[in-house]
Image (cartoon, rainbow, N blue to C red; front, side, top):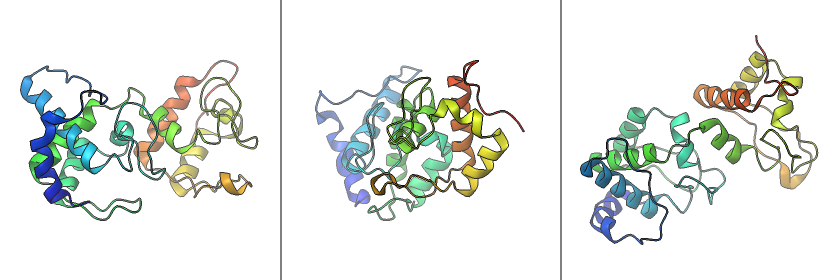
Amino acid sequence: MRVLVAAVVVFGLAACVDDLRPMASAPSDGTAEQMALVEDGLAIAEANCASCHAIGEAGESPNPKAPLFRALLSRYRADMLETELAEGMRVAHEPMPQFKFEPDAAAALVAYIKSVQTRDPGQALAEQRCARCHAIGREGTSPYPGAQPFRKFGQRWWRGQLRDALRAGILVEHDRADARVPPMKLSDAEIDALLGYLDRIATREDPAPKGP
């Protein structure tokens, strides 16, 4: 991404973005200045990020390794993300190289990211990282027969065991070539979000993983 040039161009194009695009959620304070900042961030995301990332409130990332924008703040604090974007951030997924935004562009992009955060970042994380193989809701059959439904995790894992395994990297056991994925290794913030989601889908019949 040549964002140093693209970000400047995008700000000038923000008012010309197709009216059929998904609209960003209105900011809570409703100010025209904040709404304009979110719109600028959306334009930057569309120009620089949408080829890899799902940048809206729904949908999958074109590059499966690229995080969903609607779940990014389960991984980063907003202020830290803005600082990294302005100072130069090397992302974990390919093929995007290290990139750097001008401070105003970084602030606009983070404002937009805030506006599309899902109410349940753990669900968004599960949708991106796990739904290809697992049933992630309160019902349904896993797409891959060997993958345990999320609602049954409490039968297999203690909470601390699952946290430690996700922190170290769970080696996925699926034996079919097209279902193989890298070890499932999450940050502490992502683990908290995922465990919170397991709590929210738990029922009396299928309780969430218990402590310790």
